[in-house]
Image (cartoon, rainbow, N blue to C red; front, side, top):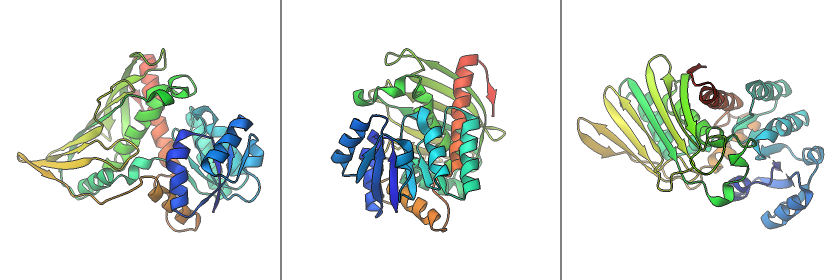
Length: 325
């Protein structure tokens, strides 16, 4: 299948383009708002053609679009691709606006095209093992979940993520945390309360955020998201009535990390299935869905739910109150 790459991004270059090629897909055209940058990107990453024109990018013989432009462009790029009859894989967050995100999902459904969100952590062996164990009742009733997504944002990535175009750490990292909560536990966040501060990388929006909330009716959760922690260890803990799962070093784009089960004072390592590339399984599932076989790893609805919660976190920071979803 031939793809349009809408956005000459780092994530496309380092993660998605290799995954597309591993899955036998072709990057036919790359779009950038700067035509010269598009051409340089094309040469560097061996893409067939380049353009600065959105309509040209979604025209021709491409059948799918991967959207990795800056967050403020996701809606326009997705709608143009859907209008052209393309299947769409969109980076998170789908939009800065819940109404726009819903329109994207609805437009794809009306057009009969596959619309997916690139929540790559759903293919992580730690996350998948934890999800399976919870479904089998390994920890009993889930009482609480604690997620840490604390990193030091690399200098090369400190551009649009730290201004209004990116939305700060909440729309970059917390949106992944929310999807992790939903995917692993099968529960929906119903209430969020958050505080955010600027710890030196940005004057706003916040580069460090802590969120607490409720999953379902009575399961507590907390999120710590930061761009400012040079030695942060990412992961999550799931506490239940019959045990605790401890996942470490598993919230980044690589299939690293460990999972441990703690029960009655015994700490046991959980075996994990080996995965070489977190993005390739998502591409394979997307291509299968286009062929009518199954669903994407994360659907447009999943992206809608994660961005709704992430925007509620920003609302809670701004208004200093709990926000119900």
